[in-house]
Structure formats: structure tokens, C-alpha cells
Image (cartoon, rainbow, N blue to C red; front, side, top):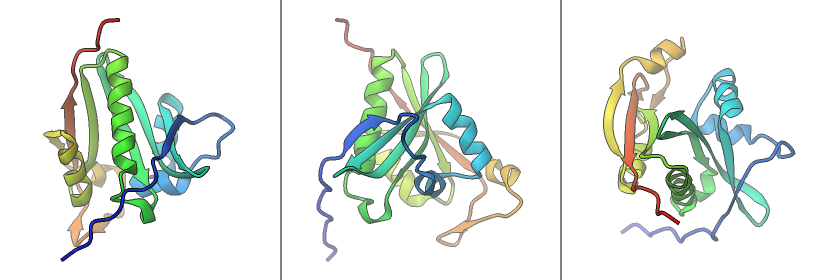
Length: 166
């Protein structure tokens, strides 16, 4: 019988400011190379999850098309995975997208990222496509996760309700 992890203390979520140190370790946990991350960091907005003043998670949210926002990068400290921090960040992404009039929230993850695929689908995202060879085009060195070669980008989408009129 496996023990269910206790939820982490409720993280404080806030938009990163220029004064914040860039949490490269968290960004690299979800993506790479640095040049690619820098591109969407400069165009998107980074949100930090803090517990007791420590950054324990982050996400980068960006409008990719009219009515569509995408979670470009999301990661949580290893010791807090599975304890609600990632879910809090996704809830924030959904709320922000709805507030801004979006009808769709998107995310992409690797074909070998089984834990992440489950996480997004539990949240309500549905698989809408596969960018075959995405990671093969991006890197000369193929990585493996749980014995599965990372080759393709699995695209997921979450339809959003219309914002409440004020």
C-alpha cells in the first residue's frame, strides 16, 4: 500500500519581476536548451510559486494566438512534486487565461513524459495532436525517460469557459 503524499503548504503565487533571480534549475527541469527558454521568457510572463519565501515552482504563460494561451514551461521542486504546487500553478494559468478572454489553454510535453501526461489529463487537458519529431529536430542528442526515447511533442488543450461579465 502506497502512502498518499500530504499536500504542501499552500504556495503563494506571484508574477516574477526583473529583480527576481531566474530559476534556471526549474526551467531546465521542464525544457531546454537555454536559448529556447530565453525566447519564450522574453515574450511570456513567468509566475513563481513560493513557500516560506522560497521559490518551489514556476511556470511561463504566453499568448500564442488570439484567444489561446499556452503554458510554455512548468516545473516544481523535486521534493514537492505530487503535493499540489503544480496544480496551483495550472489553476492560476487557467484563471488568468479566462480573465483575459481566452477560449483555450494549451500545453505541450514529451511523448516519454508519462507522469506529466497523466498530470495534465487529470487536470482536464485533452490530447489534440502530436508534433512528430519535434525533439529530434531540436537536439542532436536524444534523451530517454523511463526507457522511452524522447522524440515527439504531445499537444494538449483545455477548453475554457467564457469569462463572467462584470
